[in-house]
Image (cartoon, rainbow, N blue to C red; front, side):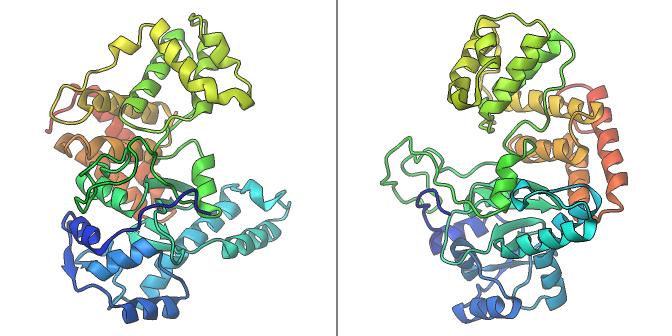
Length: 394
């Protein structure tokens, strides 16, 4: 299903994006080669993915799938990894997607239903490492997903946005349709202020939208135990909005409810906390009023540095580290938030590199070794919090 009509990636824009990659770029795949890959492995590339690979084939690192000379078994394993990871969580971790109906009591029946349903979902096609695009022929603008079992995170609104986030630490320049900022430097003819068109895909997009722990939302539920912590949570949500992260209406309502229960006083707090679901559209305005009434709005960091929202990002990074240490956020989830929305936009500071490397290691390891990596992420978060802030490279 396509919500509106995203712009297709052009060959010129794809070449510009590949200049940003830390990879060797070989000759692009011809139409015959692309068709041959699809026939051999039984999937279809999305339109943007085809254009990207036709512009050039990244190689020189194992994370890039080699669709021309790669080991067929390795490519098949990459293609099967998203489904097999979800099935692992169905079997071992109690995962169940509500759209599949009631979960059977027997594990074999649950696994059979899940496998059948996943076979009907669009195939996910590897872009780089654990980053995938849905294999939806002829469609453009699908988000790039980071997939680790049933932990699925949107890593870019589309392929161009993903490349800029992953390899430069800055987002695509198109969200507000400003003239002259498109990747191929062509003037924009669409009205300013139009929100980015988004494409969705069965099952995978629903998991992302329905999960509170995504790359564009706060990576935990409110866990405040004091009024001060509740106010801090409200302020952190405001900081996330400031840097462009996605804060859902229900998150604002839940944060308001926790603050109210802990005795925080603000005239707009009871209306925010008591919003019925069919009035959640009012949450943003009420949340802004609560910030103003608590005196938080003027205290938000000003963007007066060379890096966008630098002060806000450092404050959020410290908060995410606290969530990791206290157990309010899973180590890989909190670390992923820092890696995605902290490290890159902050200019890849060396002080955060050990944590980011551990997050990358977690993403690339199998089920067994991840426990040790998660413990190492917690230890590194504790070490960073014990030092000066912002941290300096040792």
